Length: 364
Image 1 (cartoon, rainbow, N blue to C red):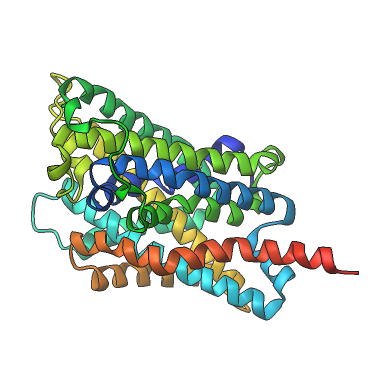
Image 2: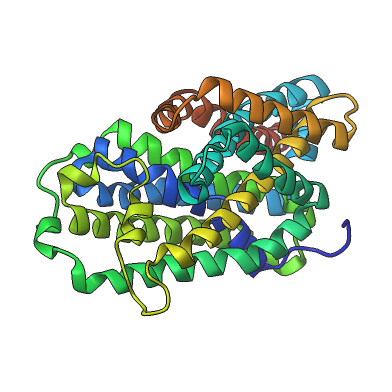
């Protein structure tokens, strides 16, 4: 479990896996509601600053060390632990919503009977917790298998849909107003696009030499790639359902895939896509549980990793069920992340590195 290192392709797919399930399940509906018919421009506008953050985080972590060790060196044992604790709390808020998101996706996708949502969340947490316990190298290897499958299925669905899309509904291509570039849709997009930077600063100690040299470029590239994938998907949703109906849907890509017969043997595209999507959701939960456990170990004086992993998993499942009783509440939770957790997370990622470099410049 503790052997091996992460290569550049594995870093790319791991960072992409942190975004793919949210990109397909949670983001599209809220972006369409807030950004309007030109919401597919929002990720393209949000991508450049997010890619700059990802590049800076990857470059700094590759040169100065991973965030947990560097925060305590650069800020001191007390201030460093406070920054790590704040970042841990912000990551925990993400984890709660991600666990609940994947549970909602499982209920909407596979369950035809009255299965309690708590049982579905438990079924999500068990394999994800095992994946987190196995560590970042195993997570990266799993991501390099699952993420390409989901990306191929996602792009394949968009290609298959082209003959049945109503292109006129998605025209003109150039936006007629600036609603897509206001804070609500941009904040929602940045909630999701900041995730590769967090992965980069926390797995830096497990990167091989080639991945260290290219970490900044890899993380910036995956951020831009994800933004382009989401923009294509949002455009296809508008062209398929029309702007008013697309904005009313909670899980639009699920309905999008269900409406596309593409083979005499598989009646609907969701037969292929949804199992891969749920595997990706389990992978994302595993990644965030590991990230939170890693931060917990740095923020405390002494932390036994298995105990932290179990307690954080249980807390994420319980809080997700209590705080977000339905799918609409899960959707609205993105605004809380944008207003509170996102600034803390972005600041926590950069602060130790910037302070450490400023201190080195001023030191005699």
